[in-house]
Image (cartoon, helix red, strand yellow):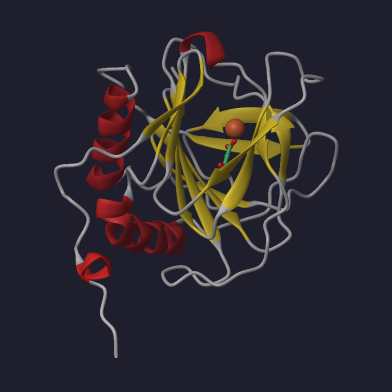
Length: 220
Ligand code: SIN
Ligand code: FE2
C-alpha cells in the first residue's frame, strides 16, 4: 500500500481563504463558511421547523421552483400583489424566527473581508434547491438601503452562479459555487443581475441532493 504524506496533511489554518474578484465591489470568498457549515445547516433545520420552506408565487402567477423561508426582522415574500419584505410569515401570521447569532456573525465577517465593514443585516432569505431547480436572472432591489451589500452563502451541492451586468440583456458569466463559498456584492455591483442555472443532480455528504443558499440583506 502506498501512502502520500501530502494527502494526509491538514489544510494550513493560517492560510486565508482565497478571494476572487467578481467585479467592482463584488468578490467570491472561497470556502469562507466551511468552519461553521454544520452549525449553519443545523440552524436551517431548526428555522425551517418553525417557518417551513414554501414555493412562493410570482406576481405573474408562476410557482417558483426554489423553496424559500426567512429569518430575521423581515422576510422576502412574493405573491400575486408583488414582492415585499414582510415582518410576519404570511403562512402563519407569526413573526419570522430571529436570525441565529452564527448567521449574523458569519455575514458580518464576510462583508468585512469583502470591504464592507459594519454590515448589519436585518433579514436572511433561505433558499432550497433540489436537482433541476433554477433561479432566473434578477436584481435584488426590494431593499430600501442600497448602500449595504448582499452576502450570499452556498451550502451543499455545487451550483453555477450566473453573474450578469446592470442590464438584463448583459450576458452572464458562469461562476462555479461550491459548499462554503460566500459571494458578496455591493457598491457599483449592488444591482447586478444574477441567478442560478438548473441544479445538477448529485449527492452531498452534509445535505444530500440539496443546495441551501443564505442571502443576508439590510432591508431598511
Ligand atoms: C438569490 O439571488 O437570492 C440567491 C442566489 C443563490 O442561490 O446563490
Ligand atoms: Fe438575488
